[in-house]
Image 1 (cartoon, rainbow, N blue to C red):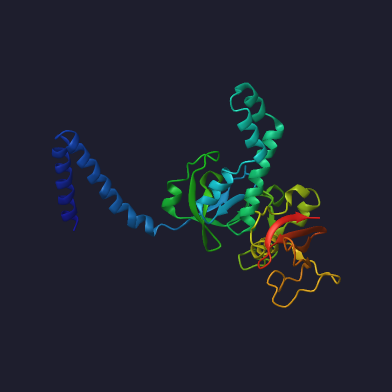
Image 2 (tube, rainbow, N blue to C red):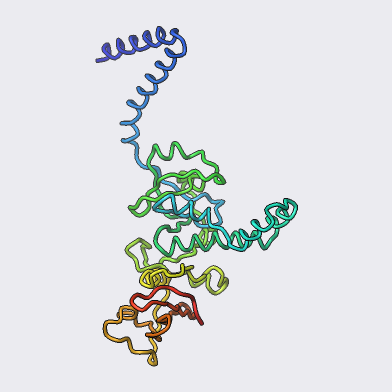
Length: 306
């Protein structure tokens, strides 16, 4: 076997030398041949390599986002504020004014806020989730080899595994496990808390962390909803975000067969005329929320009402 491999190696190197001398086409053939050989040799090796255990970089002050689809990252990055867009459009032919606009604190705050809202929307809908220091994330060996040198400021993405599920993540936020534990007080604070001891996906819908609620109400925004979004979907999002139905003794009685309110104890009032508006009340950690819907046959989100 050893002699066989030695003969094959000599034949390959001899062929490479002869073909390389045939000009550009010959060089291209040699390069492709060696590349193919490398793939054939490395693929089984890579399959035998164990997954790489990763940890969030200590310098990360915010939790990392894991998303089922890359499109979720694109939508977060592409989120735009209506006011900012209107200003840019209005003064698009006045460069000096545009410079002042985009460097203004108000502009930057609105941009940050719309990114944050979109991020929370993805989390509330189960499209993404947060992880912080100490969470066990793994990556395929080949995936990590091609991503490990990514800069944390560059949006290079890689596939990772967390709690048995596959997600996309920004490679630059991660490093190979070093064994150095990040102190609890230095870990990136989660926007969403985990109520179960194991914190896995079988746990009840996550709720926003109560400890953060006491200090920053802005970190607990109401998930943004689109006009005419199904109230059935709105309910799912609210419950995932920790909101609970408010059952009121003086609420209207839901008529039999009224699909707008059947099985929805949070219903306060439902009208059969005009826009066929209904009001649904929710609460979370002392916060009150009333959702107004419209539609005679199906409740569709209309607005957040008083």
